[in-house]
Image (cartoon, rainbow, N blue to C red; front, side, top):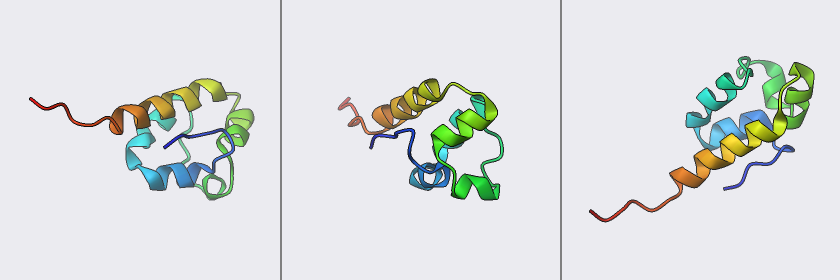
Length: 73
């Protein structure tokens, strides 16, 4: 799974609720508002004056780690 700036916020949240803290840490606190279901990550970052590239990087890092196979111990 790869997240990009053109994805709708609510779509990312539906993929994995574990992304909520990442959005919160980056200043996007209104994830339940009507705009989250129609606004892209890039649009939300622009409106809130946030670093979109950093947010995308953090979301993708989350999914990369999540998708790693469990180590055989």
